[in-house]
Length: 381
Ligand SMILES: Cc1ncc(COP(=O)(O)O)c(C=O)c1O
Image (cartoon, rainbow, N blue to C red):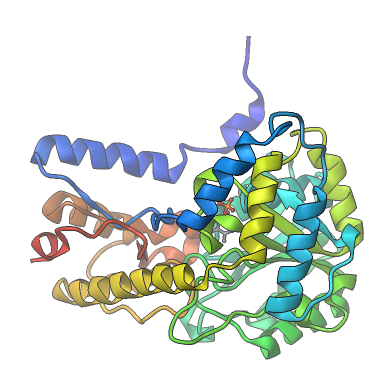
């Protein structure tokens, strides 16, 4: 009896390995590790939303299958929010609920790629952009987001990565892991590029509401004609700190959305009614005071972490968006894994080795600003 051969394509999930290493170090050192490796939004959701969620769960029929697509409230909530936030009009067939952004990320590979096809993936980037294509026998072709291009897309390089097998490109700003953001002009260039090269664009805007220092992130759908070629993924995990509820959305090109819903109907049975109602409520009744407090909490932690990183010789730029700092390691270390493991052993501080996010992470670590930083001074001194 054998398991599927495709399991051999993968090693152990990097964060799983890190968690084991962390447990070992805690055991041998007898000290709790300061874990700045994971990007799980820890700021508690607004109590207004949570109270509503209790109500929605208590409603009659909240337990029944929700149906595959959006319920009316979800459609209305998302349409209102896109209009208010981005001045973008969405038709009913231009949106769909997801069981978290990652649900869309993984199932879009099945929707858009056949075996042998190619997809352009940022390096460094969110690991789920490359895993699912590999699982189905398609090829991720990595494009560079390096310091030389200010961690933005270098279109001259990107041109060279296009082949007749390229089906689509993943683009993610505010970016995991670099924290880089883009403006409307950048987005216009991206749309021009995909149109010229006749490929689809999937824009991951999971961190659109996690921005700092007055920066406001745009939506790809603000660009004229974007719906002809693009879809955008959004996440309630970051926007409203609902990470554990598993809620997200996809908006934009209706052909892709209809195809994705067909694929998903083979794998899941929709986002539960109480959660769709919660999503709609949160989108319609944005608790701005709560949102400001959350951003201030991340911002404060970002600044404290940057100050402490200095003590061990690391210089971090103030990130404008996302929940991470992308920090260069000192020259004398072989690579980010060696640096990260040494810091873990010596100071019981865990930073994610940049190689988890691609080859270009060899000389970087990713530092999360949504971590518990109690006792940070003791660890860094
Ligand atoms: C770039 C990016 N996209 C999507 C996601 C998925 O978020 P969720 O599935 O929690 O909505 C993440 C999560 O870390 C991410 O970093």
